[in-house]
Image 1 (cartoon, rainbow, N blue to C red):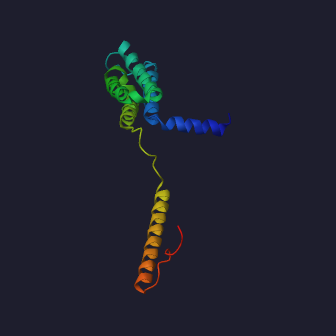
Image 2 (cartoon, helix red, strand yellow):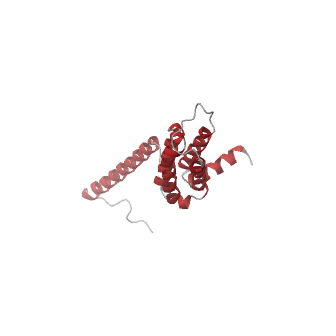
Image 3 (cartoon, rainbow, N blue to C red):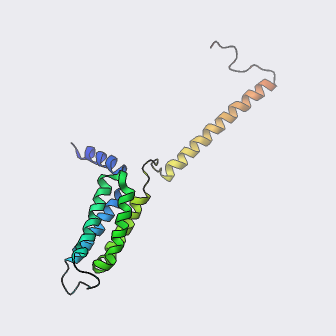
Length: 165
């Protein structure tokens, strides 16, 4: 498999799931886990530093992976993930020094708001070109109609009449 084939398959796979939300959620949970292992002078001793400090970010990573690989249940996973992200404020060094908490919250919101059946967005250039084409077609139809009306008013025959079907 060449790189371009792999890239095209990956873009197709990525387009059918809330990819950005899942990746942000995984990265946020990983960042919180990394800050839990920071040297002692860096760690802020706020909240419980026991099992919950490691459990919540691990579950955040798990929810992010589940969002990526099972997007049909994204609503449930994103609701659980936002609660886990907010819970890390108390249990895991102020949510990984706020960075992991924000990444997890934004990722879960993106996953919650993702709509699977939406048509792909078009660039503004393509939208303008499409509108211009529609205007041109409408103008041509209007001109043909006006020419036909003028021909009939002058007493002429319609261009389409008299031809076999």
